[in-house]
Length: 500
Image (cartoon, rainbow, N blue to C red):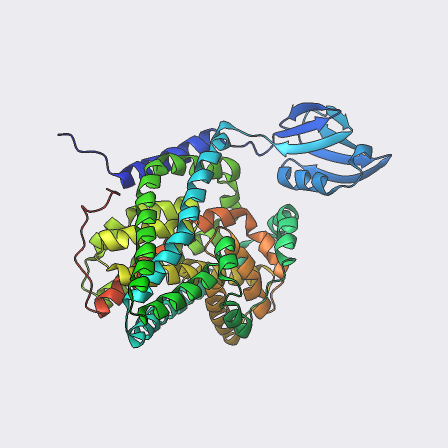
């Protein structure tokens, strides 16, 4: 009988085909769709765009400033009085009046992205009830409160250890490679112009880091609102408290409540397995859209910075984690990573620890031999407070921006980055792109200009995909380490589950 192709293999094929498809059907860096006088016109291969009002020239953009020109037009008021002229290399001019819209083209590389968005939404839909149900059942099964405190202490201690190690790796690489020292003033100005609006919108959110407020906000006023808003930290707190006190009540009614949540958790896990059947196609559309829209040009501009971040994430994932696995357990490193393939694929393509959580839980319980009562406690907590990849990225990004601006950060300031990045990582929501907002807190802590995030926004989506991988691998690692320390770790079973 012919063996079926493993799901993780299909996902990897989908990822590779997505990169190729997105590269072929990429969005042109010069083509612009102009809507003027109710008619759409496509302009391409222009040498400059001029915006005029009456007889005065408002702004001129060269052929490398497509995104900047579109964003400039979007911000303009009283667009009906604006005249735009496209100047071509041969000197020919094309004039547009009453311009109502400017946009980049939409290629076939991005048209199918809604399928990938549906996949992410399905996983996010599952994540909240799964976290709630699993944590209640997990906490209720740990009948001794001291046992719960011990498991919680070990989990938080291990997460703190990996976070500090991750940030230290990031700072060491940033000091050795010094990526910010090699950026030209022209490149700096071009990036600032292109992404300053995006940077301003994030800075305006005015997020601050206050440990006391953070602890207070962990406690939900209304747990149902926390569930509706997807506030994982508050959901985790409520679920653990509910599970703890359910374990103290010994009655048939309590068993019925725990049985309900146990059934809900099982249903969510089964739903994950079915949703994962569309993963190869969803990954294809997500990666295709990302490559088509952003391309690799922006990576060339920020190559040294991107290499520094990716090198740090690689050391974190393939050096630090295997080392910790060998120190704290006897689990075979190669087999551990082999069963993580679906987790890595989903994390990379969705850029979301929350969306990956259902897959991580299934793999940890069915393939890594972690009992449900530990997996359902450690993993949701890790999804909320453990963001090693994000913490490393924030350390490198802060050093990079400081170097570009000519700041020579002292040892004390770099230690401040370690502390602030660790705390910011705990407060980072497990969704795409939020690490950039938390970076503002890190920059504030050492006095580096916040608007510097405009320098790195262009590659943030691509690096977000990369940094989500160690975020989720660290959660699985913690699960295995904690289960082993409790003497409850089973054997790795690569043939179990539906992710083969």
